[in-house]
Length: 407
Ligand SMILES: [Zn+2]
Image (tube, rainbow, N blue to C red; front, side):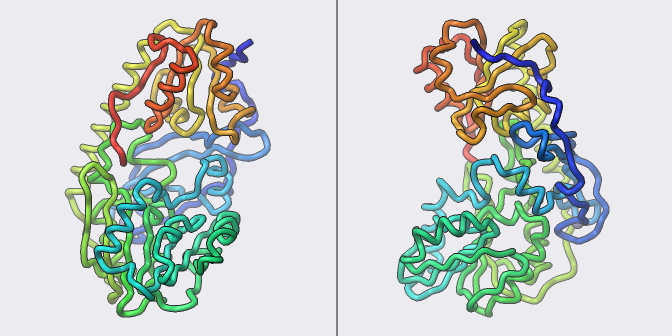
């Protein structure tokens, strides 16, 4: 028997004031936001009557410097609760690590006896790929991740420190500091950059990489305004933040088909004057139009389901919440759903009342009547292959994307 259920049939989900906090613009410090995008009562992963897992996600633009950011921002406790089922900490260097290391090497930052500090190192995987004759230090707020990293990396001379980026004291001045896809996750990125600046020497080089607005044109419904990110940088707002924290930019580096903007900077005198760039507004309007178009495309695919009453969703992660927020998939009252997901953290639980089970169940369900929706962006094609191999016919599987861009 398939345990079908209807949407929002779990009564206990709720929010709590401790999850989020008000903050002024993280780039210029002034409190003059206007709303760009809102997702009310956004649910983070599985249902819970005990823990608050819903917050209003409000993306805003600063009217002073045009920076884009999440307001309210998650508190430390809020982040821990909301992202406990996200699967991985920030510092998503997977897949790019090889290219990032080559780039550091080409800039002579991986030499013998040099020291490198990786901020947001998680378990230290990136550091573990660097030469052993370097001094490698990592810092992360995630205590268990640091503990796991120490078990394998301490014997190789890698030092891992658990600490708050805004306060951590370094054992010595590093030659290089790296922050790959970390800054956009922080509630107060200025404080972090300023703390690192205080502990940097004249020769210290800072390498920062963040996704930027100009490269955020994706067809993913999850989009540029990711719920994981607390600041949505543009080239200008990244540059403003760095100069305000006392870092002078030597080089800005971007690659085709990749959303990251990488900056090489050196310590300088902090600058109070920020540039408000009107081009950011034009880019934002274009990006929002592009994203609305992409969302309309996804909705069109879902319209193919028409009168279908029973739907298996493959994927119980954040992508499914985005479908809830932006499409009509869940709007038909008579529809019943079940979710399959290969993530053991989610199995046996539910999302908005819909049970989440291991995908292996599909083998026993394949002769039942239902349609399947693949609720994943980057994972779409591998899920499709798995579903077909389990005997689900191609003509009852809805794919939401024609192609995907790595970003
Ligand atoms: Zn601002």
